Length: 73
Image (cartoon, rainbow, N blue to C red):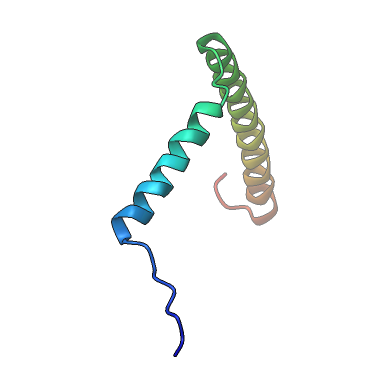
């Protein structure tokens, strides 16, 4: 006869996994509030710069298309 390997209880298995997750979270180095605010400001500034660039390119191409086709004078 084969010896059956007993699978752990569902709740025991999930409990172990949850314990491992909390153990790993304790090892994480969280950034300070100032660093988060600074990084967020940099991201927002870059988004605004790209918004301006893409809007200008879109406006330029739209104007060029209007000149070429004679639509939207």
